[in-house]
Image (tube, one colour):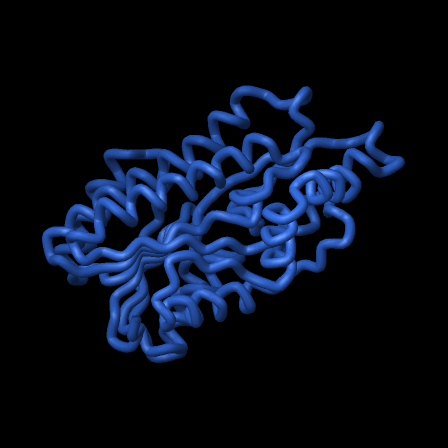
Length: 273
């Protein structure tokens, strides 16, 4: 995909991976960036950075769980700012909690944002892309959409679901010339990594590395973009020796550390894994 001159909408654009993707798109010549997140102040800061790079930035403060508001805002943005060529679904939340300590409201929030929020904005954009017979959709999943990890069961479930959603959508929208891609980063170093009990032996990537990987994948027309050598190694290992991979995941988990008896559940907004 040639990004130059395109209009892109990025959810979760206020920080982390979403912010880096929006900036990277601007650096590669995107004409207009529609920035979606809940925090207006942070979105405005990102918009200023994008405009300094020579692209136009439109701030759309939205809560993706508010279906009516999302539908109205995106329809208005499409009319006011032109067709969207590229949709990046990056917004999400996560709760790092041992399953026996999970609470239903946390699980409901993960499903509401990670799945239903993504569904809502994808539906309103995809219908218009299909009518134009043109467009590309990127759903940000995670390495945990391939390998479920202890303490992240419900988050992993939503990321596995995103993988299934993406694969089904890819087949359905292909006749309409709309391509659907999944982006699967591993643990990524953002301002929220301090809220996560890290898995041992995992070396965090930077949001900029993830964003650059996306750009390369878009240029190559890759249907699935697995980011980083650790991700490729983990997925390969799970195919060749699944029992060993599961054992290593258990050993790397925060639950296996001496401090696990004092484990405290963690909350991540707009997660990086």
